[in-house]
Figure 1 (spheres, rainbow, N blue to C red):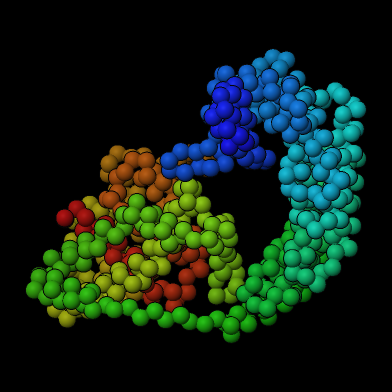
Figure 2 (cartoon, one colour):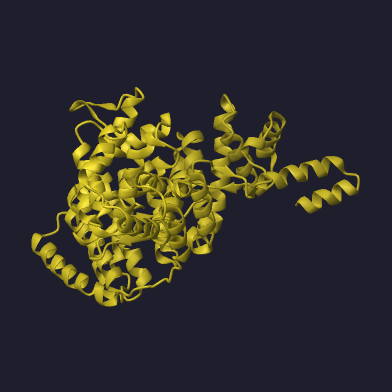
Length: 555
């Protein structure tokens, strides 16, 4: 269409060219039913974007309104009316008139598509007919009857066809707008379709679960709690069936655990739950047999050379300062985010989510596909990268090598460490001995003792630093009144006020509180850290961070 506009301009037909260019721009917008913005630019790049709602001027709005009333095709009528209404600048009776025009046009488009194979685009047209009809034709009984007849016919066609996953979009509209009769019919249809599916194919077991779940939601919306639970139990059993066909013990344990959770939620018999739990324990015993190890050789000679050069001739206090404040520039959040974006910039990260399991196959966390525009995704990726690479390949070897060099030259006593801890504003009053015990344990390579003493000290150290700058660390709770913030809340507070030294907030999130990181504070508080895990690299890094916080006032 844009090419024809150019040809018309070259032929001297300026009016026709302008009209074709305008239609080309509105045609290029991407319809996003169910999203936060109904019409999005189809192309978004650093240099700009194609046409979007923000580009529509007052003159464009008049043209859209005129085209909606005179367009020769249903598609163009529906598109012009819908875009005009999406700008939220239409007022008065025009709203109802345009909504009615768009609803009828979208319905005719959906009806034509219903005679062939149902596509996602046809379902979107039907959903827009429902939305606009609700606004412009709510009192037109004939239209509503025709609309719901078309809706249920297309719903039946979707469940009979190869794209059963589209039933999710129909269920959303049924929950929002349908009466009890249509909800009941749809729920029964979902259950019968799911029950009749062949469970031999892996994809079908996933669809079986989806259809039973949708039926459960519809029954619940009708306050038929027992019917909802029956459908929910069938959804849980479909996950158990899927787990039984998985070839990987870790994958099987994940699906079985999900199935057990849904069966519990829907009041399945206790005997059945116990039976599945015993099966799950047997499956998890097989996980270690299929796990392997990946070894990555790391050349630590540059680290040894650095330690020999900088710690060989210094006195004890200077050596501790150099250990505490070397390599701290690597904790810059902005740099880590850019690095993480580069690592995640591949097809699979953008298309697939992931689930992290522990050694027993228990899900720890799940995350959706990576979105480089989402700040939470960027922070998660940066923390993952820091914990998996920088801690393992740089900081831990540096700290351990430095400790060995320090032990060769000096003897670290508890009283010596307690003396500088007691004078440091970075160590909170009343905790000096515990912090000193943890630091001395690290200097003597007793990392489990260091972790036991230092992990509970990070939160009061952060709180003390904020209070020293006049920051109120209390938060109001409706049940318990005022109480101290947790470590996660303290770090969020520091994000606003910026008291902690540069990079330390990010370091503490990665080590202590973020689920994508080491999460030491939460795992230790809930008894999830084993004896073996108390002598790993994250504990070594925690010791180093606490040493930095204690020595920061002496820099």
